[in-house]
Length: 280
DNA sequence: CGGCAAACCTGCGAGC
DNA sequence: TGCTCGCAGGTTTGCC
Image 1 (cartoon, rainbow, N blue to C red):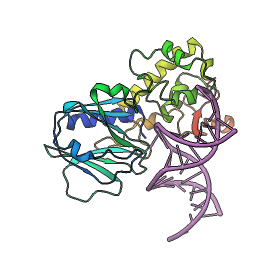
Image 2 (image 1 turned 60 degrees about the horizontal axis):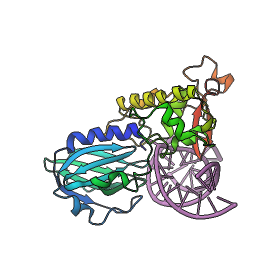
Image 3 (image 1 turned 60 degrees about the vertical axis):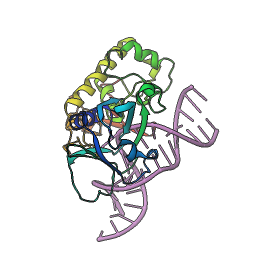
Image 4 (image 1 turned 135 degrees about the vertical axis):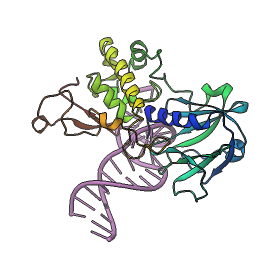
């Protein structure tokens, strides 16, 4: 899955081929995604013109004519792949195909089916159940140390788990939380409410920087993420701590064989990676 | 409300 | 080769 940078990479790839095009043919091969595919999914979309391909948090937000909005979430393993038209049968995990009026095929593929496709209306988008509780976009100027401080106030959970809560800030996932906390030199074990203004002043720019750099790299490709072209992102080569248990952290000169290097712990049921020497 | 485990589903690598 | 186990970019639900 895709976190914000991966979804943004996919959004950009889709925008190039979809914006201004009309959907000539839509085929749904199975309806049982995380949420059932909407009734009359293909018929509703067929013939409609796509205006813009946007993003909110980890959701793709595709605006079509007449105020119809298609929401897409890639879950853990979802992909949107762009190709020329083919007449081959869909792959085992290809669930939906969208063909445009100029001969482009977009295939939604998701082996684990944790992703979803849903309809919304433009005029009530912010109130849609999937979007209404989302916190601020971390790359917008409004996402400031002060705003994050308010969101974290009173939270006795760890800062790691708090940053994964999409209601507090929207778009971070397991990779970029570990990476941002490393950059800000803050221990993932700290209580959310315990961060000082000074620390929040490091954390917010760290979040913005790591997301921005990851978007520029086309996201991180560990197992599933692909750009719409099928190419790999390459930000995984820039990880400081994620998936690097036992290795030396880039800021430490200490010998990982002696200090244990980067630690892996479990918080909220998910792996956290950090350097105990640099993060407190 | 908070916190945590389990659930959803498939695939892959490690270890035996 | 083949089995089991643990783990995976997410989110929701149910229980205490």
